[in-house]
Length: 433
Image (cartoon, rainbow, N blue to C red; front, side, top):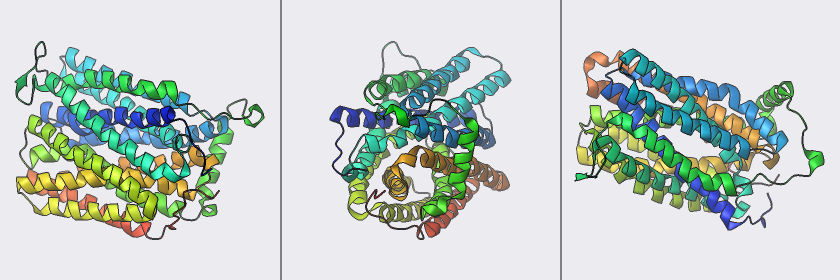
């Protein structure tokens, strides 16, 4: 990457705002209302949520490395980002439609899970192309800060998304009655979330463009066989780029845990700490400012100290925070640790994306972000299954023991990832290739 490259400010801001948009889906659907709808409202087991998340990630793992390689060869990432985003929005909307209109519980649950699988697949898939656009929307010197600003703005999107959707769920906004809006429960969150995701994605759709490449360098047709071969070569030849394999394995373990925490945090807050749905929403809103501050702060730290040292610090923070969650039953401590988790949640993505960029050539970023996604999504397949397995094993001991045991299992996975990460090269400059 050219250190003197300076994209237009409009392009950079429009790229950043996509984090603002898609985190509304991540917070409202993945973390809050889909698990609550299935486990609390419809009184089904954790395994339903685990299956839906794991199956959607299997689809990502199978398809996205190939699509990432194709996007590299055709220099076309934005059309795929737009398509995946619109699919996510449509199927999020459909969850709300079927939730409102279906009276048969089996039919309702079946379609909700199917629509969620497609929506989550599309959301996760879009991130591959979004991340791969990063070098084209900022300079080399600012990549850590821009990554951090994107994550920080994403958490502002979480606050706005939770706040704007809360009246549809509860009928009130922090106790204040909102005219013409009635309480619809968790299922009422999906349609407004889809609309918000669409509105705030539009700047990215209109103002972020793929780089202009000379026509002679472009491919003229899609060759799936060639794409499979190149992805396989990428998997088998990662030794050419020291540290990539170790980083992806480390990411598999720590993201295994972190993605699962994101999915089940609302359930833990309600089942173990005794929070209501409204107070759980308030809990998320309260901890998000720490995620914003952490994302921006660790973006600067990433640029100054390098992404590997930064990610190491972040994982230590995760390990300590989850250890406190395991041993405490004090509500004020839980809220305090929630704020710390917010700091480290945003900081994880802030430092991980630049770390991969520091290890691979820019012209292969789509392919390697496909592998980056593959590692994370394989983790997101295993993590919910680990959670469901531990919860089922300890089910007869009650909610407190079974859920704290699940958190312990996740913490062990982060420790494994932390140990493996220490063997990854510490390359402070973000591209020499």
